[in-house]
Image (cartoon, rainbow, N blue to C red; front, side, top):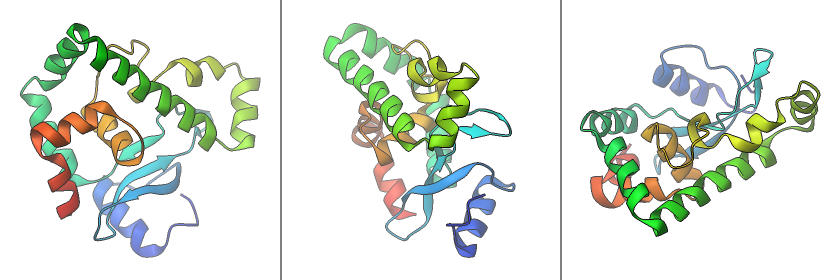
Length: 171
């Protein structure tokens, strides 16, 4: 846990996760009502690499995205990415944004550890959700967490076509 989080924030995050939080470096995004929604994670947790930069903590958004995933939307989005060169380019740009943000957010200590232990390629090649094939989506939760903090085309689609931003803003 990070000492920069106050007790109220920690209590909310514990409730959201249903467990004691580990590896949080900051709250990356909160709702208009100041409820944490995206946690920024450390890159080295429990003495191992952790390439997930943004972790969605919001129960409301999590539930909405799980419902959408159960409808087969991930496969539909992957098909759209395959068929639409502009969407594919924007999706690849989302991964590039994530990779750069992850490297920029990493502490000097963690960069040194990751480089010394030979894990640099993980942090350079693995995109959102730890995915190597940037034509895939894998997880709407990680895509949306990145969207709330950065530049993510899948998150924009989720807002435009499924109204997720309304759920996020209502929290």
